[in-house]
Image (cartoon, rainbow, N blue to C red):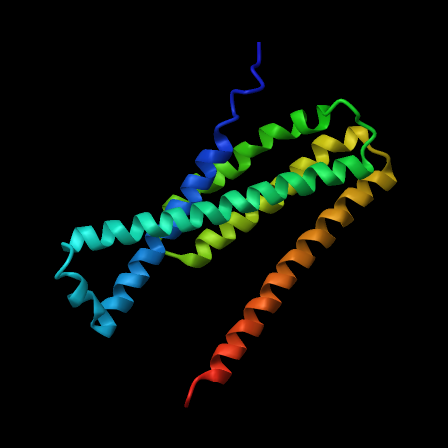
Length: 185
C-alpha cells in the first residue's frame, strides 16, 4: 500500500535546505564585507564571534525561508490555475499525481547543501530542479488534457512566470537606478 502523504513534508525540507545553503553562503560573504569595512570589530563588542555568525545565519535563514515559501505558494496557485483553465480533470487527480514531484526539489535542496560555497551552483541547482519539476508536472498531468490544453498549460506557466520575473527585475532596476541617481556624488 502506497501512502500518498508519505512525501508531504518534502516541500518544507526542500525550502529549509535551499534556505540554509543560501543563508550560509550569504553569511560568509556578509562577514567578509563587515570585516573589510571595519564594522565587524564593533559588533564583537556586543556579541562573540560565533554569536555574530549565528545571528546573521538565523536572520538570513528566516529571510530566505520566507522568499522560498512565497515562491511555493505562488507556484501552487499557478499550477492550480493552469489545471483549472486547461485540464479536463474535475476531481483533482492531476494534482495528486504531480505531488510526488516534490522529491525533485528535495534532491535539489540536498545537493545545494553540498555546493554552499557557490551562489552559481545553488542557483543552477534550483533552476535545474524547477525545470525538471515543470517537465514532471506536465508529464503527470498530460493524461487529463487535450493537446491544446497541454499547450495552454505550458504557455500559461511560461507567460505568468516570465511576467512575474520580468516585473520584479524591472522594479528592482528602477529602484536601484533611482537610488544611484539620488546619491550626492
